[in-house]
Image (cartoon, rainbow, N blue to C red; front, side, top):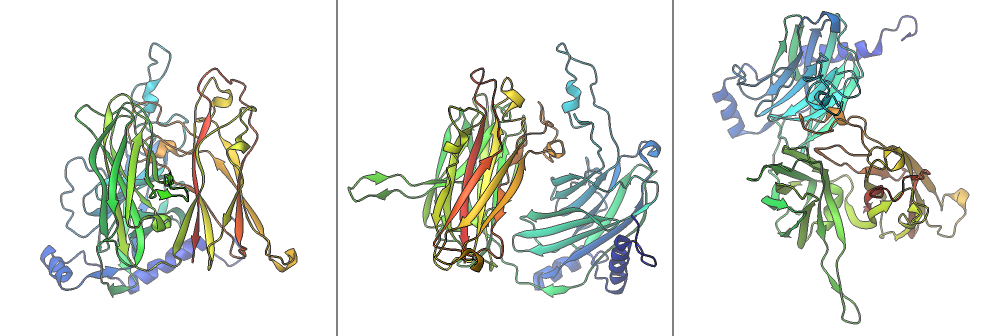
Length: 535
């Protein structure tokens, strides 16, 4: 890139400025003994926020690695003299620590011989990848488990020195993590369920050809905090789910904090005695509102709201975390929860908890309204998808200042449906949110409409931290990955949006015609969408 005369690369300027700040105000507890740290934590809870860690490293070009596999750094609050068996610097899993790993090699598959059907199944192990994409991966590891894995947009295997900066900014319920390489953002994400206090830094390499030049840790604000543990509400505790059953649980929310600053859901799938199920199956956890009685004395069953969607891994367990604070209005009094996995072979042990962190919200969710729920068949002119995604007109609560739509949609079905719909077919979709006119003219902004486009297609499946798996786990898919939670597509109303008495929400798919209708299961989009109102 060319910069104006006299101006240096702004990425380098950013890194240099941060580095100078680090030299001026370093606050590191890496030289303290464990006894001193423990005594300090007992007397007062100190939090370094944000924490900055820095590393300068020289990585050879791929053809010059000479067997090197990667490098990493670990931020911890304990000694790191013996990381233990199985520890690897390119995958730095360690208890009570946050690790950042950098993978620099492109290993071949472990089995490159075709089987009797001509398939090279080695491409589906933890090595190599089906699409032969670069593997300069950067991963985040928390308390011994990988949480995030991305393909770095920066090629750091150059034979020249690169500068790495990591920022941890602790917030209610976890931390925001930022990873930069030569000033360019590589990771900008959240880590839920971790506690502040890490302040020691160490690093290492796999391979002598990688040279770590410098390493340091600093912060620019050391403050006392009154850390409050979350109130944990258990929903399911290692309950066996098999034969496509529905687990049920009555949950009491009477003990949650009066002021909630974050709600984090944690799902763990573990192995039952019969063994893991072999296949990637659809999974859901939801709650049902209490039934009501109409004017004629007839019972009306309460609505179900999905809380957590996931797809099971191929033959292994895992733990996932998700921010579900938007659903706070649903977590009141007593609620019936359910859990379902469409498995008919073996099974899973399901554990699910909700952690309510005390704190204050910038805006408070006050109402959650269902929009569309169920399976929308796609590509069939006799069952137009528009008949499922009917535009919804929703009454706006008094005092509403903001709204957002959360649409959790995954595509399912495959060949001989044309274009391998819906599991392996990308498709564009459009969300439109309009306010109801309240009698003024359009130029006075008494009516406004906004639309957003989104591609229902996931191309980072092969980077899934839940690996290795069996089966075709590395294929790109329509909005999901085997062994992963499903994050909703979130559409926020624009800041200038003016609410009338109601809003209209519309969801449209681009055109698709299934020319293989009737030859197999119909392709469909599994949908749970809600609108959330805030004050």
